[in-house]
Structure formats: C-alpha cells, structure tokens
Amino acid sequence: MTNAIEIDSLGVTFRSRRGGEVRALDGVDLAVAPGRIVGFLGPNGAGKTTTLQVVLGFLAPTRGTARVLGLPAQAPEARERVGYLPERARWYPFLTGRELLVGFGRLFGLSRRAAADRAAALLAEVGLADAADRRLGAYSRGMAQRFGLAQALVQEPDLLILDEPTSGLDPLGRMAVRAIIQRQRARGAAVFFSSHELSEVERVCDEVAILVRGRVRVRGRAADLARPGESLEQCFLRVVEAAEAGT
Image (cartoon, rainbow, N blue to C red; front, side):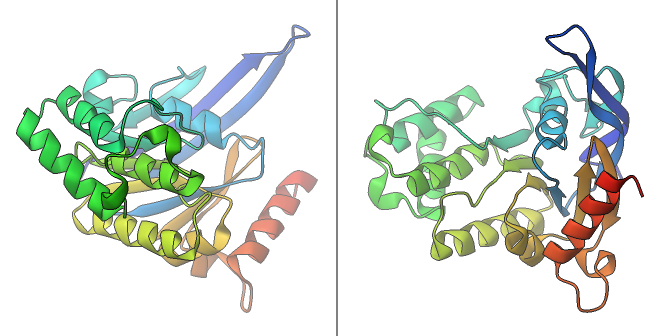
C-alpha cells in the first residue's frame, strides 16, 4: 500500500541575512498511511510550516525526499489529489462562497452543473448553506475558516492537509470540523494536520508526531506516548523540554 505521505531524511536549510545557514529541518522521517489521521505538533519555529510547504510542493528540500501518494511532492499529478487549508487563507472578497467554490470545481475539471452541485453540498456540509450567496468579504473569521475547509474538499482529495483547522471556531464549529475529518478518514483519505489545539488533536487523531528543532522526536498513538495519568498536553511539554535540553 502506497503511503499518502512518505518523508525520508528530509532537510531544509535557509541562508540567514548574515550570510550563515539556518537549518529548519534536520533529517525528518515521517509516513502517513491512507485512511489515517495524523496530528503534526510542535512549538513555534519547530519546522512544521516548512514541512508542510515541502509536502505541498511549494518548497524544494535541501536534502532527502518527500513523496505524496507515491509521486514526488512537486509533481503536478500529486498536487491535484491534495486538499489544503492554510492557516491564514485570503479569499476574493468580492465573490460569494458559492461562486468561488464553483470556480474551483471548474478548475478541477467538473462540468458547470457538477461544480454547482458540489459547491452546494460542501457549503451545506460546513454549515454555510444560508451564507452561500453572501460575499466572502462579509464572512466572519469562523465562517471563512469553514469555507476554507469546503474549498479543500472540492475534488474529494486523497490527502487532506490542514493547518490549524479549528482556529477561530466556536465549540459547535469544532465539533463539525471533527465530524468532517472523520468522514474523510472513513472514505479512505489520509488527513495530516498541524494544530496548537492539543485537545482537538487528542480527540480526533489516530497518531501524533511531535517536531522539535527540525526533527521528529516521538511518533505514535497519543495514548501510547503519554505516561500514566498524563494528558497529551503534558506529554507534549515533556517531549519539547527534553529536546530543548538536548536529552
């Protein structure tokens, strides 16, 4: 079975303004299987965004490899099968939610009728049916977040990559997002998401990977990584502190 994501010895180095080098990723190894939900955790500056950029084909690694659905991450054929919700998305404010989703559907090769049907179904799924014909510029932050999830699902992706998917959502919105993520897993898609909402990660993920200083320090089921009586948050802090201390 081909993994949805296969990262081997991934390294990314940037040039600093002073002429030196900054090592953002330092030998990351990670795999995400189809039909699995994997939470990608780490403190700010750990390299999570850089990893996502490589997997999405936006950034070429300095060393190592990243494959998506059996193809090089930068291959257009791979990116066509990936749905992506960025942490801070900006939509065309003068278009309505329906108009933009139909446009995305057309870009993915759907007929006008099929794109319209798909847009209506997705807007209903994320709770925006009543706001389908409202301009995106008038959406609240939570509504924009829900719309972002809808656009990530337009082509029924085999891999769904989410960056802070519950940011700006109220408890009902978070419950809805969890349900959508679980439905994606049920149809066989892989879900890989980065989040600082550890309680959400603990509820929905099959596995978690904790990245610190550009390296995956632990990987596995949250229940297996945590010590007796320890929450995922406490486990996360312990792993980060040990990595920062060099132990």
